[in-house]
Structures are given as structure tokens and as C-alpha cells.
Image 1 (spheres, rainbow, N blue to C red):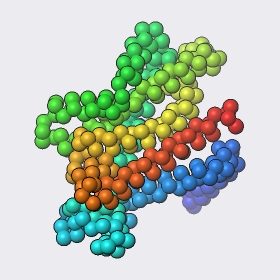
Image 2 (cartoon, rainbow, N blue to C red; image 1 turned 90 degrees about the vertical axis):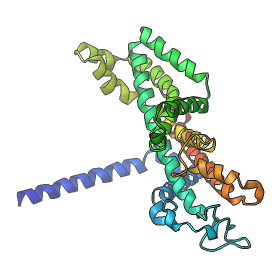
Image 3 (spheres, rainbow, N blue to C red; image 1 turned 180 degrees about the vertical axis):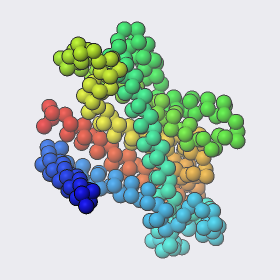
Image 4 (spheres, rainbow, N blue to C red; image 1 turned 45 degrees about the vertical axis):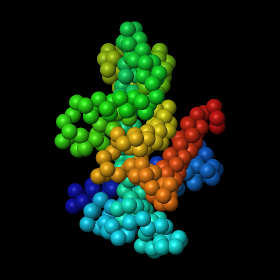
Length: 321
């Protein structure tokens, strides 16, 4: 009986804490800024629609484009439903394999978002870690990390990703290349975008390490690692969130660029970039929908995420309130 009462009290306590947190959020300046900006609300709704459509594609998509048994070559090159020869079963038409374009966009967006998210997480972990070490330790360590960052900044992100992806292709056996292509792509994009996180965190760390709470932690004997992780890191993560939001759109575009060039996601797991590449082969023969609709999806998704990142940057900047 006491155990049941204790569980009920814990549930009630959790409910009230959640309720208080929601009240504080809806009364905050950030939520006020959000609902006062129609463009931001529209960008948020658009982003949510893309995320739901992508990750619920096995349920929501009209056809499972990953299942070869569902393909019918007799349905190839069907135009969108509102054009002559179109079918209501294929709202945005079909491609050269009879694959439904709308379903392919939903499944392709899923792959693009997964690659984008994981590459940004990799960039954040690497860039924040190196930025903390560079800003807190200083000296030769700082000079070495920053010189590496300066060298990488002199090359475009797509070129860095191409070089890393090509190196991995040359080293890995041919039988493993398609199996690990997505992982190589994630690492390549992540390694090409860590510099901005490192430079931002380094500058914030150099400011924070001279403050009194860091000096107090040193006096009581805390180790440098504990000071960096437990004291400095929470106070430098604000700008990182903004950069990560904007970097997500850049990572999705980079993935689409690499896949369009034929060095990204394998054809068996099509992304938005591969859909655009395949459709581009038939663009001038009249089957425009095969590349236009995936291209529009990529542009709208990247624009919506960028608008959210711009709003978040302004909302977290106290000078702009």
C-alpha cells in the first residue's frame, strides 16, 4: 500500500513539475517572440510537417519505395495527377522505375534528415571539445588547433567532404563501400563543419575562464577537466545551439550536393540529392516533375530550418530584445 501511495505521489510531483515548466515556457520572452513572428511560426509548422512526413513515411507514404516488389515498370514516367495521363494514385507522378515521386520524396527526406542530424551532432561534439581545450588550455595547444582550423577554412566544405569521401572510398574494400557509405558521408560532412563550433566555443571559453566562479573552482582543487565540463561548458552552449540549427540546413544541402555528384548516399537508399540527380537525366525530355519536386522539397526544408535558426539567434541575443 505504501509503495502504491509513493508511486502516486511521485507521479503527481512529476506532473506538477511538468506543468510549472510549461507555464514558465509559455510565459517566457522566447515564446512571446516566437508567436509574434508569423514567418517563424510558418517555418516551424513547415519543419514539423517535413519531419513527420519523413519519419512516418512507412505509415503515411502511399507506396513503400524501399520495397522493390511494389515497383511497376508499366507505371513509369507518369505525369502528376492534374496533367493528361496522370493518375490519382500518383499525385506527383512517377519516375523511370515506376516509383511514386511523393513517396520517394518522403523516404528520401528521411535519409537526408538522418545524415544531417548525425553529421551536425558529430560536428558539435568535435568542435565543442576542441574549442574548450583550445580556449581553456591556451598556449601551443591553442595555436595548433586554431592553425588546423584556419587551414580547413581555406577550403569549401563540399571540397573537404569530397576529399574525405574519396579517401574513404580508396581505403575501404569495394564490398564494404555501399554498406558504410552513409557513415562515411556523416563523418565527411561533420569534419567539414566543426571549425565554426570550435572558434565560437574557444572565444566564449576564453571569456569564461577569467571569471570568479572558475577561479573559485580552481581554489577548491577542481581538476581542469572538471572545470571545463561542469562549469565552463554549460555557459558556452547558448551560441552552439543557434549554430547547430543553421548547420543542419547546411548539412542537408551538403549531403544533397554530394549525392547529386554521385559520391553520397548509395542508389539503394535514395535521398533528396539522388532523386534530383536521377530526375535531372530526364529533365530535358519532358519529365520535369522527377527533379523539380525533390528540388522544391530540398529548398523549402532548408529555408524553413534557416529561418528557425535566424529567429533563435535573435531570440537568444539579449541586445536585440
